[in-house]
Length: 74
Ligand SMILES: Cc1cc2nc3c(=O)[nH]c(=O)nc-3n(C[C@H](O)[C@H](O)[C@H](O)COP(=O)(O)O)c2cc1C
Image (cartoon, rainbow, N blue to C red; front, side):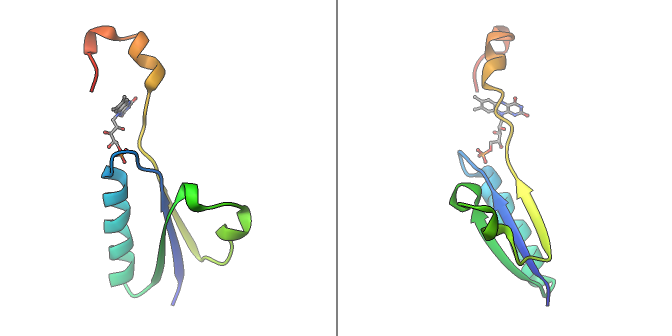
């Protein structure tokens, strides 16, 4: 059995939900999986010992609001 780390950043929960679905898919395929928030990983040693990695993060283009004010805010 292989061991996979799925880690993510999520501000409002959408990426977290996707990470949970991905982790469940990996689990169903018969592999061991750990799900972690990126902010909970304190050093590189915590990234060791896995056979595979999935990283996920949303895009937040905060600065671009100044360039495209006509598009409004989300
Ligand atoms: C202030 C703000 C800025 C954003 N900037 C971008 C962007 O530049 N590009 C993009 O594709 N999505 C952008 N989004 C959409 C978010 O990436 C999207 O809603 C994402 O699913 C949020 O993920 P989270 O719920 O895991 O935090 C922005 C959303 C907000 C509220």
